[in-house]
Length: 301
Ligand code: PMP
Image 1 (cartoon, rainbow, N blue to C red):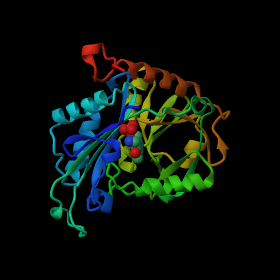
Image 2: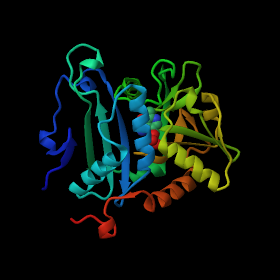
Image 3: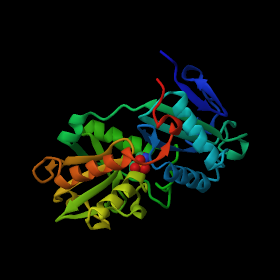
């Protein structure tokens, strides 16, 4: 079996050799930013938007990405090609780099870029047919005035804590509320509810990442003629919704059929949710930065 290649600090290395220093502040303090991106059939979906978010996250924490967007695009494409992938999950990490044990980032010599591309482990089809059971958890979403969820930083402890709570409660995913009790998002996905044909999602200022899938779904839903409102809502609104679904790069669009033990409508994935998933999959098949333009976008295997 050919080995997997990782782009690490300026060169491609084999997966087994892709290691970073224990003095990297990404490891020591979660000091860095990242993106999770997806390629479908050799097309990288919404790459520009992901890079924009990565560079904005970096700017916010005064971290300089050591490549231009054009260079980083080339590196990502090259990582996919080198691993002969078509359907891939891509992880881009920019850490503060190696420093000393002190917090001060000015001791770190240079930011470190890592790009990993792997064959996609698809979510099981049954999960889309059955829908997810979700629970609201006690831990609250990071307050935007403390650690803004718009910064997709390597500090994901808030999200990990709520995932642990969801695991302990025996549900598939957590629903995070903000400190005022408004619904924000899942541990790694945005949330939507549908009531009487209108689609609602929380405004990001309440404490949610501005998901790229979220924005794509808002556009698709509007194109399909639905009204989409970014409005604060509570758990009660979720319990009495006609449909609930989550969006994210990994999960795409997935129905939620139970929240805190309350069945959503008849407890089955809703019609509009299924329609949006279908539309979304149509878009991803025909969109994006092509990794294999010279081969009609097919990898040589
Ligand atoms: N919220 C959080 C906290 C996330 O980590 C993610 C995954 N990046 C999302 C929402 C969904 O965002 P996207 O659609 O850009 O993957």
